[in-house]
Length: 295
Image 1 (cartoon, rainbow, N blue to C red):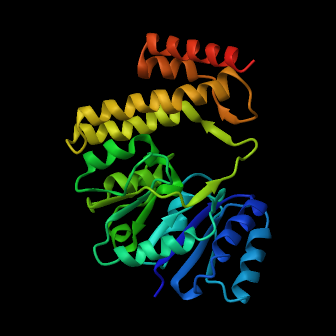
Image 2: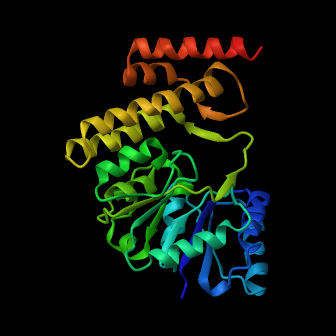
């Protein structure tokens, strides 16, 4: 039985992908327990050829060419998975030795009850794994970290009944749409650190602040309007995102140049509209203080 499908959307990151896959194979988990799915937006056949080589060696790997650009490639990857659990995985997230095997064991131990597994990878500073029985408590715990692709997983049976066509999901956060619309409200937030993330030079290509301030908060606000997420939780998500995401990324993309390629021309207006002028001024002050301290 295929317990787990590691579903990796990728585009032209051949070297990253090799290291990623090697981090899975090194644990020597039997091939019949898992599957690797590559949804490939690449402009060449390097990844396809590599997948064929691995398949000839007995690795359970599936290459899915996808000529259509965009984040919907995540859904393409998940759709192609045959495992009981479909885990989305960034091509720059590399398993720590021994942790892929531990993930397989976690899937085995939860396959009967099938809680929605969220792999926080230590980002939430939890002392123990946390169980939740409704969307509000889950979002309150995971806040904006629930946008992270490598944290996401969904059971195949839940994926099949959760709308996932292009028209059903958010353009920028299709997997988060699945998470928020999944009827399975039995959640298990996993505290353990399973993988490390490699920095990608030149990462970006989309409007970062519009993506989070408008798209993501808009999704959570819709759940607030429907009564599935409380106003208290919405406010917590919004302001944790301000302190832990907006300020740091404003510093790294607008206030200084770290080589990212995000679209940032309208960042100031977007942040002012979302948080107000005083919080925006607070960002400017925080950036100046950080610049002064690191001199």
